Image (cartoon, rainbow, N blue to C red; front, side):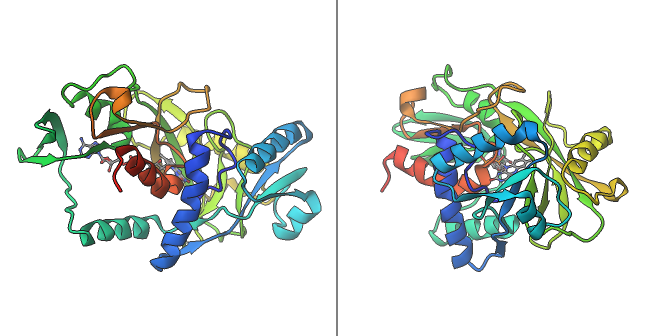
Length: 316
Ligand SMILES: Cc1cc2nc3c(=O)[nH]c(=O)nc-3n(C[C@H](O)[C@H](O)[C@H](O)COP(=O)(O)OP(=O)(O)OC[C@H]3O[C@@H](n4cnc5c(N)ncnc54)[C@H](O)[C@@H]3O)c2cc1C
């Protein structure tokens, strides 16, 4: 999903790079003819107790300059007749893109500049004469001027393998696993449908991929290891959430699909995680960038995070 930027605290790095990255990614996929749909997103308050939270979300979204409007129950039903809610907000800038085609296009762009894309594993690095000397799993060694640790769930482990790095600001990575269920009947929705967010994420929402397959997820459960097995005991949690906003929901149509794991640097239930881009002032090594806590909306923000990294390295 391409997020508009309403969930994140004003002045956070997430708010900045999500809003900027969202514009950049729509421009990029348009220029590259990569399939995308700016579907828009409806965020619903399903009962009166949620109205204050919906208002706060609207207020923080407007502070982030995200285009948003309140929708009455009647207006929601004119847009999506199977949705039940008290009221909702509409985000016109939310949408979906073809992620595999986006990643393939980025790889092509890198190769066109004459740089090489490797698929080998980083083992360790040390600094010598102003360069990083990297050891890979192939036992090849490569030298580079800049080193960017963007290894997702492995950022802490990779940092530990860089000689002479100062570790106090390198955060322990925790894992929040999310499940997705596919819905085996035709997607009745034209928009992304989201419940209100909670401290662990955006809530179990209805999303479609670029081929209009309807999928629900992700939930969020902190786990101790990187394990992508699908836990079907999550079904009830999904049914409870989905039936709170979808009138004609048929639980027998949910099919276990896949799981993903977000990289967390705050504990379960704490919320408010921000992206962190650490430079030499933080870890003591010139020309090394360490990214941590890049969970959602990391995809939406990717081009803007890249611009921040370049800025921090002082490359023009
Ligand atoms: C369930 C789920 C749902 C999400 N939904 C959304 C969404 O709707 N919208 C959105 O904007 N974002 C979403 N995100 C967030 C987004 O996917 C991440 O923010 C983004 O993938 C982070 O990118 P990254 O490059 O930092 O890390 P990753 O995508 O994790 O990539 C890290 C890469 O580093 C490689 N690596 C690790 N260790 C080594 C090593 N030693 N040597 C070589 N390579 C190594 C890994 O193989 C991997 O390819 C979601 C994430 C999850 C898990």
